[in-house]
Amino acid sequence: MHTILKNLVILYFIIPIGGCAQGKSNGNLAPVTIIDNFYDNYHTYGIDKALDYIFLTNKWLNISDSSIISLKIQLAATIKLLGKYQGYEQITKKQIGNNYLLYSYLTRYERQPLRFTFIFYRVNDNWQLQHFKYDVDFDAELEKAAEVYLLKENYKE
Image (cartoon, rainbow, N blue to C red; front, top):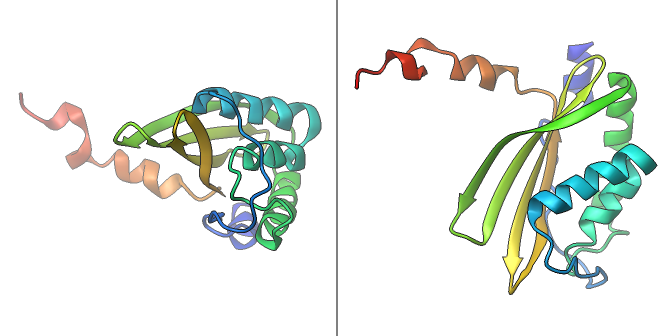
């Protein structure tokens, strides 16, 4: 099953920002609030509505863009293989300065997890989605982090 998912999912699917101005402002919502709203929409209405919601945070992104439509189709096909949605949890938060943030979330399903990565950019006082990607192939990263030379316990203080 894992091999099928690797072949089905593009290791990570990045949605670059471009296209016509058509989105709405999200007000002054913090990125974590936007992500929580994304997952609320996902749980209630499905992945298409959740993606529509989060892409609307960026007025420069055209929701009818073919790359977004392709993302929705590929992600829906992947999710079908994973079983029932079980919830989500934050993996990490990284930032460059105060206006560019990356959040990585483990999205839990019955069969195996999926990782969603959100990158936000703050323009004036409004946060907008800058990039979105997903993948299922992050086992190697976890194994790499567990290598002896990287473990905190092995450093002398």
